[in-house]
Image 1: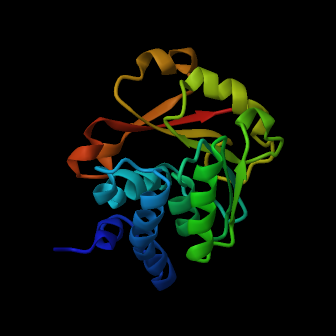
Image 2: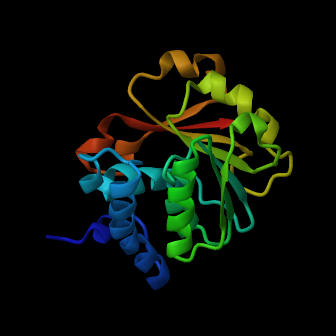
Length: 209
């Protein structure tokens, strides 16, 4: 059986340090999940496909420039923030969630694999005052609601190939959600990058703000 890490390496070229960090996530998430449930019990066996690779789909839409600041809203146990922070060590990631125990898991895992570019904060996104190049998120709420909350956090200063804004991972039927932004939103099907069945209905939404 191939190692879970080979799934990531099939789509991304990793340094030895990154490969080690990704490989360590399996044991760490299993351990923490037995104490604090951040991933459903049946899903933990699909950690690399459903959570890590899914998070990294954002990197298929944009390779963040060095020095970029990224806010992960509703990070839960650290997705998409931790996989992205491993892939982009020259960027800074702020992971926020209103649930303290989830923030603790994300924080402890980031520390355990030596991520120095991650800050985990227990707060509601309404209370986050910082400015970021991009806000990322995984299906935390409807797009129009999320836009209202995070517009204030998007920096005016540009340093990436795409204008600053929001990059969100979602699944299923999104027409109603994206309709208010139909002239500027970009929706990309994840099965155009990843061949696994899981990604058949998954999408990444990019919205300049």
